[in-house]
Length: 608
Image (cartoon, rainbow, N blue to C red):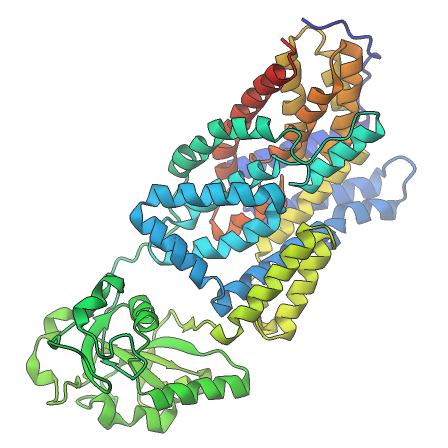
């Protein structure tokens, strides 16, 4: 039991404070019920705030201030930062800059999916101790998106745990997040001694031994699978593999390289003995398997001259190279022709990488020429690479039906440049030379200027759902703060703690700040919570430092809603998450962390 509290009487909250709390609760309920889309709920929230403050302005403010508060989120640095980070992430994806990291983690996931996820969580945790967790997530999101395409765990099961691990890592040091720095700075201004970088790291490391198993083993099982199931088996394309002087197959036996190749890649009519340059081998595989095998074997499945021509044209015209699937129709001149006799490469400047035909028909030998080339027939699906104009001309002239699923090839020539831009932006923000907003914006501009990301494709990097949700969350945070709702809630909390033991006092403070940070903002929670913690410590005769740490920890327990922190919204689109996913996985984690950290603070500061 702690000492008694001599707190002022708690009055009735103001009209604006009541309205702010009501709007927040209504928005929360609408998100949880899920009957309206997140975009509609967010826009309605902004509209209610704008109309309400127009007719009932905050004290000592003008009508225009209310409109600025409601719509200010669309121009807020947090939203600009998130959009810029999405563009940076897009640059890494379209240039293939993250493929080496994805291949490394892919090998770990091949050993065991659970081991791969654990290694990833530990990496995210330790990186976030020293680097702001936002750029850490920006780096990891496209890697795990690529891994999902390669058959590893779906993004819906990995991104939420990764985000939680990065937030937990940011909690471990005073420099882990800007919120930590803010809380410590306010506490110093109020008279508390300065904390070192690793002042409370042991407490967080102990708590992580409890939290990480939940993130690793429990959280993925609570999330759905956002992979799109294909009711048809993936198409396998047959083609001829060309062995050159620089090929990994040159002067080697086939068996020596087979273990390095993807499982969906297969050799047919395999020759015996060592292979020589200019030799051709019948192979088949899915589109992804062919790409991966070409990279490993340093070989091609189309004539080198036409591939070089396509790449030169793409460079000269600053266009992306696209791979599409086209079906041979009954009117096509290609029927009964082979690729060498069709003249496709000469006529159109495109390369056919492979031909798909049902397996039951592939075995008929009369479909092949003496040289091993397949004669095309109606219904065949061609895997064709080229530039858009040439692909359209080929489809139109030879009566081909273009199928859905066109895929742009990574601009690998700019991969190193994109990685450098991202690295510099992250580095400058991490060591505090520039704010994350400025560093991310500068990086995004460089991505555009250098051609790593094209202006006409930027829409693919941004999520409209995330944009309006961020804007609504900023408006809610400001109205809760400026209406006095946060201050009133803090006073109500301080009046109810006099009869509680220290562990419950710490848990109550942490839980209160956690609620604020999940519905307002980290800065609001830190600004409101730190002075309250000092006042409570003085009134109850408790040391101030553990109560301030309870505020600091609570500010970082932002797992339960997508609006709580910008990384929560960064993963929302890629992971196909809905509001309920954050509540379902985040609330148990918040409760687990509040209980664990409260007990650890009591033990560390001998408050029993």
